[in-house]
Image (tube, rainbow, N blue to C red; front, side, top):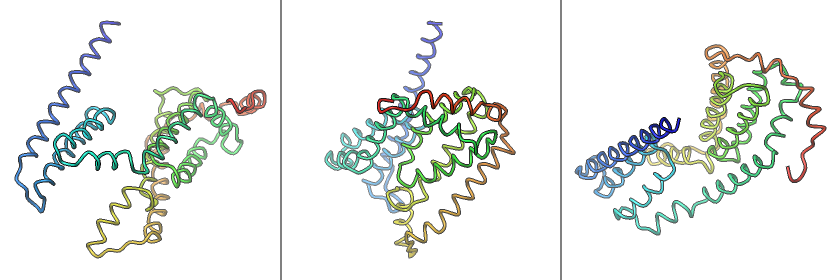
Length: 272
């Protein structure tokens, strides 16, 4: 087993090294391209780093690669260090995301997340009705998405989905687990474009269309995005129920009364 683990680690390291070399090679090729299509020389350099970023994120991940890219922007003198620092750490995003991550982690460690999960599962309205539960999950994500960033919702929901399936008796290999996870991530992704305030995608689209003569107000955006969200939720539930078709037998059979009695015997305290 130890030899097998070492082999897996070596394969992972070799793969990451290969992806890093490939990303740098692609970036170098773009770096030396002549400016065309309205791009300036600085724009071509920025584009090369952007492409390297995408390759690293897809091939390796978003951890150290993000810091590597920020460092590259400074070393290559594409953007000055003050601008990089103020943009990466001085915006409202890390100031909101980091505290929310801390709150989610405290909820997990204290047992509050498990309590909330079991409280939801003990409601009679969803007992034996897996797709009513999935619909309520979509509604909860939609409401939560009005104030919480998608990345934070994903962190919260990953633990929530894991607790739900563990409480019912599903494992990560079961299709029902994957169905809940896919649905949660789909709706989280959609919610990142529903509200035109404090969200990068709508802001970029509105800013891009404005010079072209298409002025889009907040109300106009919401008038389209909310019906679109409802349509996406309906399509997602349809795909899961009629195409993916997970086994919901355990959900229909779990003992909600036992969960309610357990919650009464062990109520949530201030310490968890």
